[in-house]
Image (cartoon, rainbow, N blue to C red):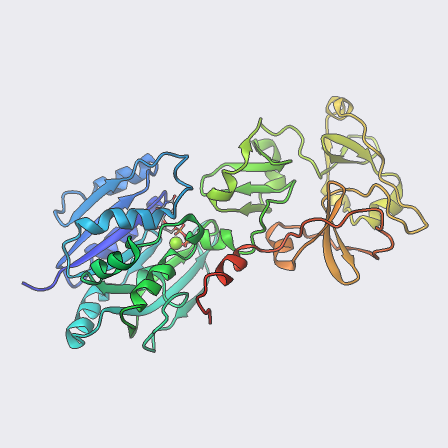
Length: 426
Ligand code: UDP
Ligand code: MG
């Protein structure tokens, strides 16, 4: 008998990719393995995919049936892995996510590495990372190298590029009281936290060959977490891992109907479900705030804010606030009439800024700010891009805006969490 590898594949709602991931295990040149498909209560499409493979006695499947309210309490893949680990019977453990494929030699090369290095506890290999767009087409790719022995594998090695001895697990559990740390705050780097636990005992030995390819989709958690501020910016179109797009209005998310397709198609911000689900669901969106509207055949242009229509008085104001003609939507007369009247948007020649429109960007003494609900918020360039705030910033000085408070900044918070982990990042 040779040595067995236990593979733990975590899955959530990626049917096309999941099928490829499973096939990539079946196509391994090394066939002494068992596969645990740990599904996190996905939709029926996933169940259909998985059932095609269950005749293979090496494949086991478990559905977590996680309650929607509990989904965001832990780092789900770590929770699923912890559930599977006690049932594994392999000599080695290897991890796989549903958007990654193992190359055919993956298991054989890794087992071989262990047999040539009996003292080795963990090995890792080079990975190809492919960024894909909404349609699954490749946009770009890069490689994560594997050319040195790593005493600190955290933030250097991906989830799917590692194999370790099963015997490490008891030692880890003994010290930490768990295998993987599934604390919610590690959602984006739970693997790194576990590598750090392994590194307490042993380094990771490299195999400088590409043995897996991982696909980063636009709504992958890593993309979604990047540059995310503590709060979602009011007036944004957002979506989580599901298909529904929501409009954020004063802390409530409103489902967006097809009517507003043209508005959100190119500016929907992908955010992690845990963030999205903090916002209560409201009614279906009627007229979104922060858009320009007019009635057919009438010259008057209005900016919608807090459910009111604010008339833009004059070309000068229109240009100063960086509005663009092509952004004006024509709506029904009745619809426009039904909206209560807000303060008009004007531009004083004195330079003082009074009652400015909301959700507009400013450059104030070379620093970017976002004006929102009566407050100027410092904002970072990456957040500006993530939230598609792409009009040209309005130039102003602190003197011009002196009557307004400076509020909570929109800075990426996720970077801060990582900084506080006490793990040096390259
Ligand atoms: N996952 C999960 N439950 C969820 C969301 C994700 O088990 O509610 C799993 C998913 O199937 C994958 C892993 O967590 O195996 C990482 O998720 P994803 O690939 O979306 O994140 P990223 O590639 O951005 O790290
Ligand atoms: Mg992934």
